[in-house]
Amino acid sequence: MLGNLWFIIVAILFVGYFVLEGFDFGVGMLMPLLGRSHTGGDSKVSADDDAADNDKRRRVLLNTIGPVWDGNEVWLLTAGGALFAAFGGWYATMFSALYLPLFLILVGLIARVVSIEWRGKINNPKWRQWCDVGIGLGSWIPAILWGVAFANVVRGLPIDEAHQYTGGFFNLLNPYGLLGGLTTLLVFLTHGAIFLSLKTGGVLEEDSKKYAKVLAIPTLVVAAVFLLWTQFAYGNGWTWIPVLIAAVAAVVMVIATQAEREGIAFTANAIAIAGTVASLFACLFPNVLPSTTDSAFNLTVENTASSDYTLTVMTIAAVVVTPIVIAYQAWTYWVFRKRLSVDQIPESIGLSSLKAWQ
Image (cartoon, rainbow, N blue to C red; front, side, top):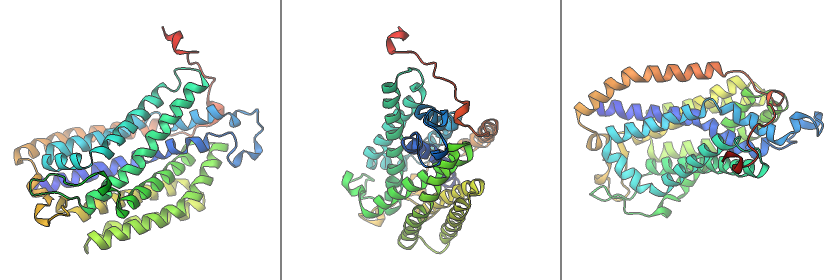
């Protein structure tokens, strides 16, 4: 019973992570495009206006996620900790099998963190350029590899009777896994564009809406193919519920995006992401990591769950701590809810070089 409860909790934590961190990735991936001087809506802006300043535009983009991106990553840390404590066997086998993609995700996340935090410390174009590269790679790599990883978990991996992974890295690059990577990439790009249309003003708002409109339809098509493949190959009767929720929400997102109703579009896209992640976990249950070698070697909730005592202690801790964390994060979003524009960005006050630090 408690094992099933913690399977649901792990699923909820990953839902929260992808919904919230998804637009962070999207903002990072869109920075080179929306950070340019002229991206469509700038026809009304002269070259010497602030709205045409590359660096100020990029600083606006970063400031939209600046107060919240680190809080969004807490969902991943909590999910990883819960997975380790509640399902040690699942954690061990999955992290061994997906070692390289998860390692690359970790490197990408570290590069992004360092780049965001240090970008404004040095007032030098080359310094900022390298930081922008780190932000971009740290967004593109996880956005793709999370989809590849989760698709392979649902599909199953070659696991022997000792629950050891017997495949290699290229086993993960199958058509279904690659489609999963393309799906998360497009979904996060669209999520980021819609988020920016909510959080920016002026020319950047116009540009963000243009990108959201362009991305919405291909995202819907690719996500629909992935969800239908998942459902027909790995789902059952009741797993149609999250699939249909995600599908309806995605259609609403496309309609709202074209109508420039960014609030509705963002909410619908968040529901679509939540429904998609929920459908993946629903298709897994009661397995947590199927074996493509022999179904007798499947990792399940039952054979990987920790003791009842461990799960009971974890449940008590979760009941006490979780409302506090959610309340704090909600308060953060409320405080930093206003739109940002280029004319609110002051001149850079970073050091002239690293030598000035000494």
